Length: 285
Image 1 (cartoon, helix red, strand yellow):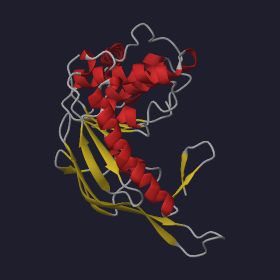
Image 2 (cartoon, helix red, strand yellow):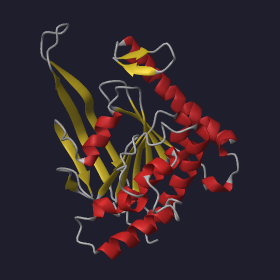
Image 3 (tube, rainbow, N blue to C red):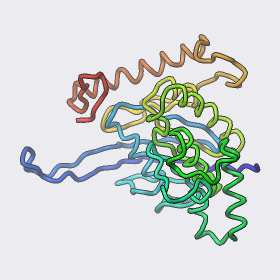
């Protein structure tokens, strides 16, 4: 399948604030600063992973790139043009699959193409090509309830790729999957990325996932989110190593990202922005 050229992303001094409504506990109107003066460039065709404490503005950043919201100040640019709203040049994959239960796998992928001026045959061919790309050839006539979680997420990825976007934005897409399926889809995603040359921005809470997938890992600070560090990941051809996660280089990068992130989680706790739940998970305060 011929790839679609990736696009260049630039965030320039981006700040995003939200007005908080008054409550009984907080009678005064307040402003939440989610991101503050964040600048970042993602070169064409790069796979960038993004980590940060809960509440650090990761999803807000993705929403800005997707055009779902606008910055309070600063600029969000794709190939030099300011992002003014959603567009088919940017595909978005969420943690929830958001498939139509009454449509087949093929019809879920063709859905977004129905307004694009393609003939029915062209839509079907493109959908079949993308389902084959994500390893779902032969499943075109299945309905979502007949698919596993991992297969549903593959359909969601195929649907986003069908537009031939220059950018793929992914918000913790594998978080709900079991460990084995998650690792399998990580491998698949890298293969798809190489085949399409798409620019990928991938949010994750998993440090191992961030290091395994990313050419660079962007670490956001605790709220308000700023770019704390960019960690270059050089692991060579990932498929060449059978157990990359045991490689000393992988262990080194994982520790480096863990240290950066651990400091920010502690800062968020100290500032009262983050609470650690009894099960050890984070929750933004």
